[in-house]
Length: 258
Image (cartoon, one colour):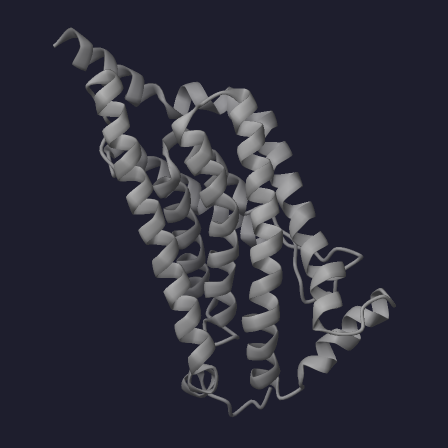
C-alpha cells in the first residue's frame, strides 16, 4: 500500500464495504438484544426473577474477559493450510465462556470491546474493515452458541450450541471473505483478488478462484478455530462456572427469601 495513503483514503475507497460491515455489527447487537429480552421474560415466568442485562456481575465479567480476550488476540500464528495473512488466535474463548456464564449480550460485548481495544492500542491498517470483520466473524461464532445455551443450560445443549457456532463461523467467515474482505483488501492494496487466490494456490493447488479459496482455506481455518475454541471452553468452563455465577446465585436466593 502507498505510504501516502491516509486513513480517510482507506475508508473512502472501501465506503460500501465499510457501511455493509457496520450494518452487520448493528444487526448482531440487535439480535442479541432481542434474544436477551425474550430470555429474561422466560426467566421471570419460570422463577419470578431475572438478572438485569447489564448487572454488576455482567459488567465485571465483560471488563475482565475483554482484557483477557485482547491479550489473547495479540498471540497469533498462521495455519499451514491457509495464507499467512490469516492469523489464528484464541481470543474468542473468553467471549464464549462469558456468554455461557452470563448470556449472549455479555459474549458479544466482550467481542466488541476486544476489537475496540485493539483499534485504540494498535491502530488500524485496513481502514477499520479488518477490525469490524473480526467482530462480525467472532459474533457469528458467539451468538448461535450462547443463544442456544441461554435457553437450556445442559452439557448436551452446550455441545450442540458449539457445533452450531462452529458451522456458523465457517459459513459466515467464507461469505464475508468472498463478498467483503477480499474485494476490500484488493482495492486497498491495489493488487486484485487474483493475488490472494495465488497465495492460496501456492499452498493448495486445488485453489483456483475465490470460491475454492474460501472452500479450501477460509472455511477450514474457521472450522479449526471453532473446534479448538469449543474444546478449550469445555475443559475450563466447569471450573470457572461457580465463580462466574456466584453473585447470580446469591441474588436468586435473596429473591426467594423475600
